[in-house]
Amino acid sequence: MLKVAQVLKSNGTDGELLMSFLEVGPEDIDTEEPVYIYFDGLPVPFYFESFNQRGTSRALVRLTGVHSLKDADELAGRDVFADYFEDEEEEDLTGWKVLGEDGSQIGTITAYEDIPGNLCIYVDTADGERLLPLHDDLILAMDDATLTLTLRIPAGLL
Image 1 (cartoon, rainbow, N blue to C red):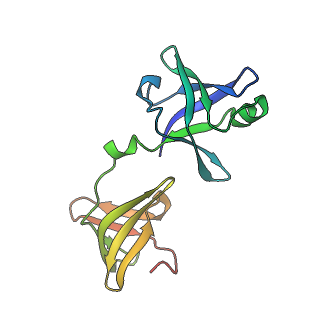
Image 2 (image 1 turned 45 degrees about the vertical axis):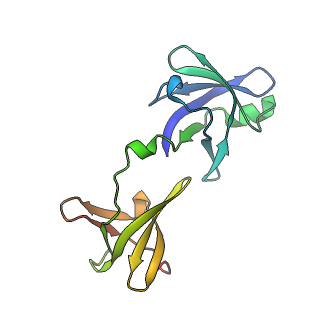
């Protein structure tokens, strides 16, 4: 997911928030799509109830489920993420060979499963199709020339 904003502070007593936008401008935000704020390491989706741009990089917003000063203060300082910008930047790995960290061939990538905060790949292996997480911590190497992806695959996933 792409970090798109940060909640600066609450505004008023009924849950309104002041957000500062980073990589994208407020005008680029799709208010029909959810944004995500992490709690305990997991992305929690929020939808916009209102969105009022303030200047070139800020907006006053209301998010679903945030209806009090206490709720808004809990979000102050947190980063805001969106996943609808990622499609433009992701490289298509369909057809790439997946190798284990020892260099053994695991299989071929056939598709993606875009679970918010946890992109996974479907790999066609000798034992059937497997769903594997595609996380930066697990990627050991990517070779565009040979179309190979080397992964550290946690025990039990194959």
